[in-house]
Amino acid sequence: MHEHTLQGMRPRGGALRALVVGFFCLLTVIVVCTAGLGLYALNVVDRKATTVLDMGGSVVGALPEILPELQESLPPVLADALHDERRPDYRSEVDVSVRMASRDAHGRHRLVLEVENRGQEVLSMLAVRVVLVDAEETPVRSVVTYLATPLAVDHDWPGPLMPDSKRLSGLMVFCGDEGLTARAEITDLRLWRGPANQHVATAD
Image (tube, rainbow, N blue to C red; front, side, top):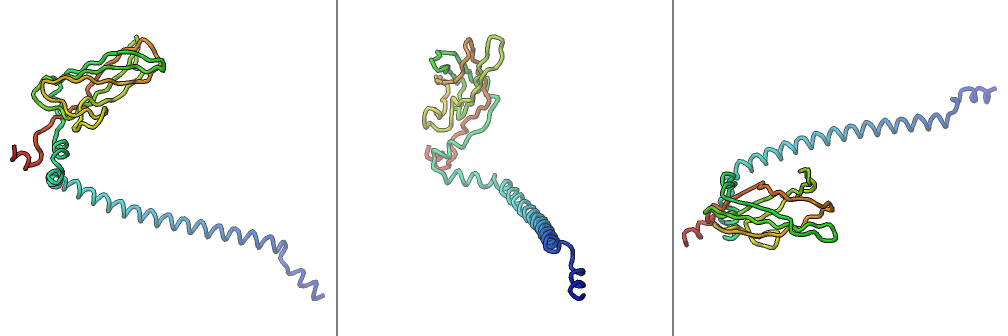
């Protein structure tokens, strides 16, 4: 009788039930811990982001004082290259034209661009957007190129454009369509403001 009483007190499905209960308890602990870690991480990120923004604001506020010192510490060629300003009003002194020269067997169009600086300022940067349009004036392809840059490095950096000067540049644009024409638009224009290095200016 004692053995039958113990068997009657055993929970039904004891092993399986214990396994299921343990699994859900473990899952609950994992969810709670993950949520806690997530909230802590968000709190840390928020505090760090606030600190970074405060530091960024301090750096931006100090830029007017830092930039002159930075330019003076650079070699003259680099300091002078950075000593320019955006001058959209000078657009009337700059002429840009583009024409289609040829098209190869791979569908690449060769464009010839010509820029003329009719004014008395040095063009330190001139960005031009070239658009290929079809017979219905629908844009088919566009590309941005630079006809003047602060430094002369290679074919992509032709260098500044002097006053009363002209410059020819070639550009290859891949487009399989035929019967296209090219349009050129000046998108950015900057002028050199003179020697940035005080020692260079005094020596001259």
